[in-house]
Image (cartoon, rainbow, N blue to C red; front, side):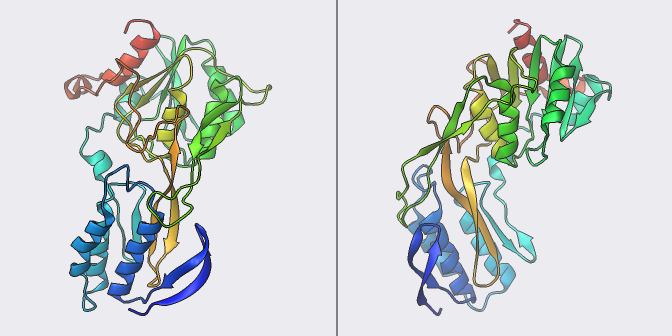
Length: 334
C-alpha cells in the first residue's frame, strides 16, 4: 500500500491525511480510516473500531476479487448497525437492514386504501389523504423525498378543516429532505421553534465534536392554512431518517400524540466520500438531537401509553389496529 501525506481541506479543516492505493489492502485501510476519523456514533453504540479492524483486516488479500473485497468491507460496515451507512461499487450497494428487518412491518397501504377509503382518497405531492367516517382527517406521507408545496398543504388542510382531528401517518416513510419536514411542521406551530441541535466533527478522535448548535423551524406565512386541532402521528420501525426527525419534533408539540411503534432512528446527518478505487461510502457524520436534547439515533418512542402494533388477525378482517387506536385517541376513547 502506497502512503503519501498530502494537505487537503477535509471535513474537519486542513490537516494531513493519507493517500491510499487502489488495491484491496489500500482500499480496506482507507475505508476503515475514513470511518475511524469521521463516523459519529462509536461511543453511543459502544463500538471498539480497533477491534473491528483486527477482526476484518486479516480477511483482506491483494489476491481477492472486487466482489470478495466488497463483501468483507460490507460486513465491517454492518458492525456500525447504521441504516445511513452504505458502500457503493459499480456492481452493488451495501445496506444494513436489521434496523427494521427484525421488527414487525406494522403497515399495509392496501389495508388502509381498501377498507378505510374504498380506494376513494386523494393524492398530491406524495401524500394520500381523505376523511375517515368518524370525521377524522387522514394523510399518509410515503417519503420526505417527495416535495410538497405550500399550495398542496393548503388544499389538504382546507379539505380536512371541518374534521375533529388529524392523523399524519408516516409508517414506512424512509426519510428524504429535512426541508420537506420543515415545510410540514410549519403548519402546526405558531412561533419559532428550536427543532433540535446538531454538531460536527472537529477532529479525528471519536469524541472530537463541536459544541451543539440549534436549528429552527418557523411557522408558515400568515396567508397559509394552519392546523390547531389535535393530531396523532402514526409511525413504525420503517419510519427513518428525515421521517424520524419529523416524529421527534412533532412529539414535542402540544396537542400532538405519537402512536404506533418506536421509529427506526437514523439521526446522523450523512456524509459521502470517495475511495481511491472509485467506490463510494456514505455514513453518519453529524449527530442530531431533538428539541429536548435527546439523541434519536435509536428511534423515537411513542407517547406513553400509545404503543400499538398491527394485529395480523384483525388485518385479515380489514382492520388496522394502529389506525383504529389513532382514531379512538382523537375521539377521546383511548
